[in-house]
Image 1 (cartoon, rainbow, N blue to C red):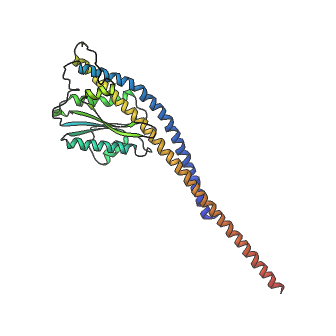
Image 2 (tube, rainbow, N blue to C red):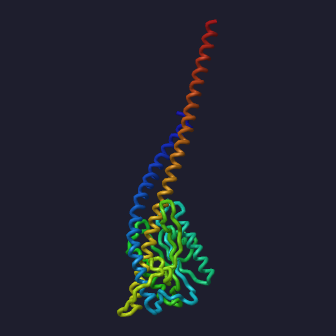
Image 3 (tube, rainbow, N blue to C red):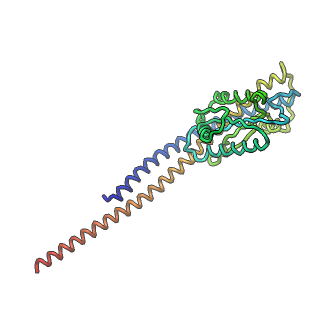
Length: 305
């Protein structure tokens, strides 16, 4: 076997092994997407009804709650960015980071200081490499987030909103995550969670234009909002984590399918080159045999004379 043919066969073996790995990763990601979609669907009714309850309390009372009242001149905002802990997902994390950068620039253009909170090692690594300040970060659960993870993230964010800006608090809370639309489409989105926009909340809960029932509150509407709004933030962050997880698995599946297809094309190309090299070797061997036989025949004919 010639040296060139050995090189081709070694490369075919290597690419075949890689193809098996990417195919397995594609199938694993596909199975995880189904689970993530079910979790998103299961969390939606709770978030919708909670939004409906918050809207009813906020519109049914004249209470000026810090989590529902617009600050006249906001000077500080918090941005929660959700990325992935792992790579091999195409432009999933980089697209979310780009959307967060755009939001940050817009907020700074409005004269606001921005505190960045990050979920996922990819976002943490990006900001760390560029030596950008991060208020807080969480890693290790982006593939399979739980409600406990959402509560852990929501606690310091709610505390920052409730705190006075002079003491390090914020006037607004924004979230950037990748929304799962379909297996082929995942889009980075920017949402403002706090202060809560009652019109947008009514639209999300399906109560826009609907006459909400009147309630009597015990002990007070403000105490009810104190209890409901943190749950609202937690549910929205949890839903965003689930959306992001489903989007990441879909992006991984798409990237691994592309890698598998490319590996298959490369194997075909290398096989053709290997066949051409083998044919060239055979042709050369036949030529050498024919040439040797012809030389032997000429030598024999010369000796007979």
